[in-house]
Length: 484
Image (tube, rainbow, N blue to C red; front, side):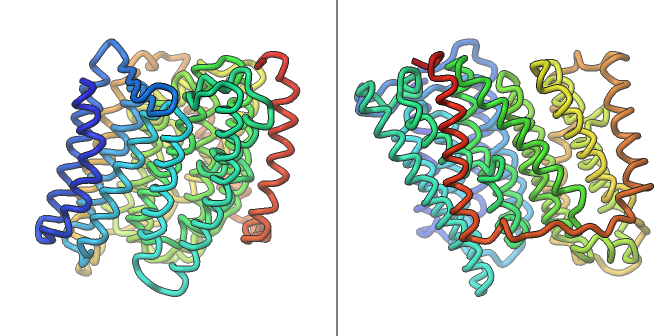
């Protein structure tokens, strides 16, 4: 299995460069890599024993492949497959599919890394591939947004790298387990890099502009899987070190509330989805032990929603009130919105119930508020007008194939936690959704509040990192007696 794992992770980078030799096969080669990852994820999920790979001892690579990894890898595989199908009959060049495959492989690498240097390399490759996809259209706006993302990402990773060096200095090893006994500043620096990379709390406020200004398939990749490359190591560390768990949970609750607080007032569809990505990443961190299932559900939902947002007649919610959506598109939009709101019969319901059951008492109120905010946010989509259009559709031909993969995945994944279907578990989500819909119709639909965007400016984003570092250091230092 070790050889299979190494061959699997290397295949993405090999095929990525082979695509240029066979440009006419670019789409098939890219899709084959995604399907290969899906098969590998299923095999790992069905395996009872985790795989622990050590290469070159302390100075080399440490890999851990288990059921947690399989959820994230499967998410990456399904989202990548859907995006490729969406772009199948578009005019995307082989360069686009090459970057997709390299991005896919580097994201997969973060889901099995268990040492800080290998993780650093994978995250840097992600930054470069993401930048090239964001700037793919070559407009001035896309290039600036891509460079902005790259600058913020690289600044964060500089902090991360210094922290990794401090961990090695303390233990002569880069393994994640080295966080125990490391100085508080090492943990704070590493966490700052991962929080910024994953779009967590105020360190992640680069995300709304980046995701909303990218092309829809790129936004689907960024929100569906790329941000999870920063979230996964935090989850892994929380599960490996119980002392880290409360810190990760704290940022989970804070992130869930921050993201949804912006989302309920946002008037732009793609920005609302981007802010809600921040919020949902908080749900992933709030209960690390069940993070894999929630990450799978969120990846499928958010990718579907970004692809749907790309075919709506407008990005402005106010304008959409007067521009009815084609009924089939509205149905797809409602299914995705129902799932992320926690409606039964879709995997979002089981994911929310499972997460709720694994919260600590101090998290419950905050996460309930975040769930209510989610229902309010997606009522904006659910209550949009719709009608059967008699005009010829301008939807990309691969759109419905992408919806089959993503929405079909939501229905199929509903069986992962079928134990959620009890009367007690069903009443609370339905009541939350009902209250959220009423709040939207009576209050938020008429709201004209517009939150300031100053904090999203580039210079402010870099400044916030310094403040976050102070907060992290204080948080870790107060727990240093448990970590040392």
